[in-house]
Image 1 (cartoon, helix red, strand yellow):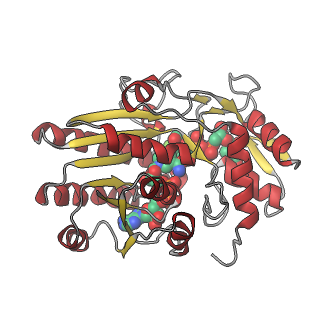
Image 2: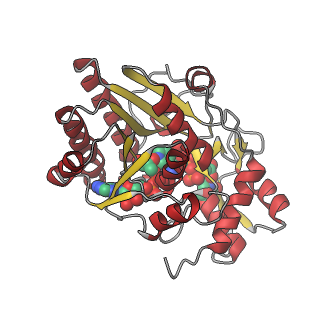
Length: 334
Ligand code: NAD
Ligand code: UFG
């Protein structure tokens, strides 16, 4: 089966391409390389010994997307392509709505036109907003706290409406918690441009000496030690969740949390990172970051039951794999 992976050169996309190839799928990647590098696709070949077909296109370009559907027999789409920085979305909301909504609309249009009925969408735990943890798929949400989150909520609604009007369409909305870590080869991983926004890449850059110390955003939250609690999931577990979603879905809209179900504080994560890698992480406590919530973790029982999927890799593995990749990665070259 041929799966079109938009955003397949990015962090989660590359790991998912590996999981798909290992599960026997053929992979076609569409990416404009706005936040990724062509070299990542070559690494996929090194790891799997299999080729992916690559189209360097912008997924907002209807004609370019339709050409992929004309030239290939596509059986399903996994749609990762999108902009993902919460802070940037507050500064440049138009860019976020334009890119993230138009990509999704263009792909839906192509799927309907070329009778491709399987669609898997990258959503986010951010849609749960101010609900109480653990977050359950049935929870209602009205407004998320930033334009990025709004694009995810809007795409979920668009895909739901389209499926209601086209009952043979199969849509899986995967709400990711906090993906971290890297493929255990150390060849691919998370390599953000500039100063990292997210915790794990910041920690690995402190470990490498690229950043002097970590700023911990607040230690006065109502959590175990006052620092923010998140549900960190190994990116390969997340990738395998996509394969499970493709393998098992039936017509209609299906929503799944992809997390571990376990909350970990910033200080707890640092401690595990230090212990497994034998490195001290310098940090300073600073003010809370605007828009952050105290705790975010998943109820994962639905994915376990219906997808027969569960995250297997522990926090120790996440910290080891993230550090292995950082040590291999040359920020100047790639
Ligand atoms: P990423 O930035 O590494 O990957 C996204 C890829 O999409 C990049 O390769 C980028 O070049 C490409 N892209 C963006 N706009 C495009 C366009 N118009 N046309 C073609 N390609 C385009 O991000 P990621 O962490 O791999 O995230 C993948 C998806 O998962 C995103 O939709 C993101 O919002 C979602 N998500 C990520 C997280 C996370 O913490 N990483 C959490 C929840 C949801
Ligand atoms: N944190 C720090 N210092 C840093 C970075 C983060 O203390 O330098 C803290 C945050 O305050 C938070 C925790 O580490 O308590 C995790 O922060 P991240 O930025 O790594 O992740 P978020 O939970 O804020 O957000 C991520 C993605 C969002 C996505 C969300 C839910 O960035 O896009 O997970 O999936 F919506």
